[in-house]
Length: 76
Image 1 (tube, one colour):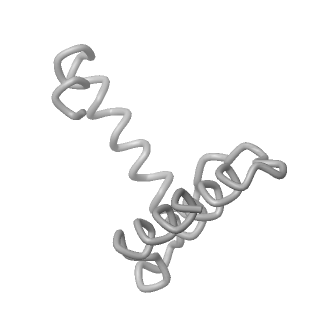
Image 2 (cartoon, rainbow, N blue to C red):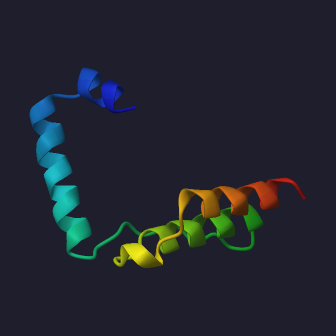
Image 3 (cartoon, rainbow, N blue to C red):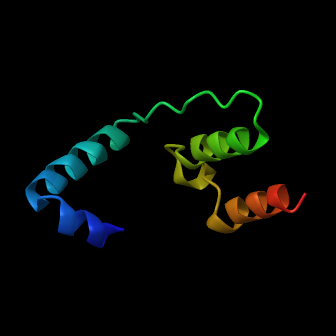
């Protein structure tokens, strides 16, 4: 993925954009997640994203925990 970005976009713009994103994240700002309504897949995805974006790393789920959530959802 990163290779794609570096090939198709000017590196100076990426660096500037990446540093702005880092600043925003460190400031506690996050993108708005669209309303998932009642779709169980979108609800799980949006809540997982919100939990994973927690400012405190110890409160974020591990990849294994996220993986298990999706496996259980898609196996039903």
